Image 1 (cartoon, rainbow, N blue to C red):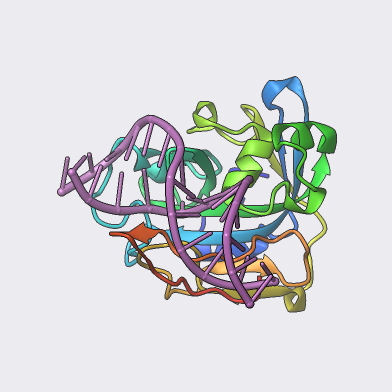
Image 2: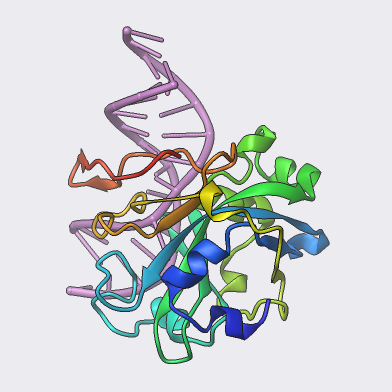
Length: 208
DNA sequence: GCGCCGATTGGCT
DNA sequence: GCCAATCGGCGCC
């Protein structure tokens, strides 16, 4: 996939990434799958975005980088998340990859995921990075130049793609910036939001 | 199937 | 210090 594809607003790119194929060569083995769930994170007017309030920081700097690069960060002490950077250099924006339908290296991914059944290998943002071996080494890498690539796949029809609020955010979940393949068995199961002072807040989601 | 809970670390205030 | 774009396990329907 070329930089021009990503040199647009994240909420235009996110739905078009449904059906594309993400491939990793981490560990010297090809693993990957078809993207079935995405979320857009904007550079401004988006309380849920890492680029929302503090301008450029050490963590979010890649979100302002060249389109078509990978923004990988670490959270909850355990999990990596992968985003694909959108917008021209200097403007923040990214699409979070939330779920894949496993296609390549399923044996390897199953091993990395402690024998989980195929439908659960990549059905969440933390799960798919574990399955594909994605970590901070991929942060800032350009697609096709490092361990990660994204290829055009069979695009689903508009009617097969559903839209909803984003999942798991402490703020910004009211914006409908999540897209997913409605009938896919590989999308994430919605969960409650993060713990905030011992209280768990509900998070909006659609069918998923 | 659903809901609660702990794990665990870096970034930011 | 506080918090986070989460996950797996466990208890209880």
